[in-house]
Image (cartoon, rainbow, N blue to C red; front, side, top):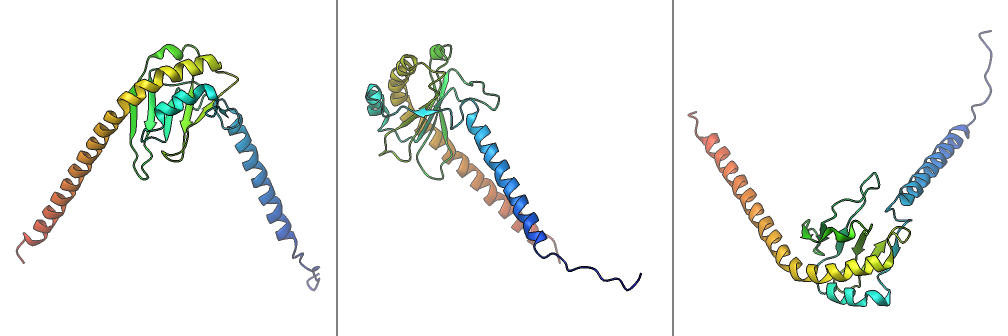
Length: 193
């Protein structure tokens, strides 16, 4: 039949499909966040122990440093701890992407010690994030007490060196760019017309 009429188009079907797709995507994102957080070293497996009275001496030693991130034995994507003889430190300066490495003894790596210290500014106390299920507190405390004076003594000079190196690199790149622009300007006017 060529004259057959079709029923009315369901205007709500596309809205239902959109709602279902959005719900599935939100659920998938939520599951992804939970899975990521539950991995070793994830945000759901770490606790802040920075406020414990036993660590006030460590807080006092590290508070004056121009640093907002300090990491020892961060876990990689496979959950393995990396860099047993280095502490990675980042400054608080906004827009400055300089990491400073401080060499430390690997003594605590064998004991499973690993932590991340963060703060929003130099005036704030450190949050000391640690996996309580994996890192015994006496070992963490001993490692922090050993690292704090080493970091306090070495970090300021190493930060100055890294900043000087970054400034020198920036000057070098600016000079190369200036020379390139001069060369292009000379090239434009060098040919007879």
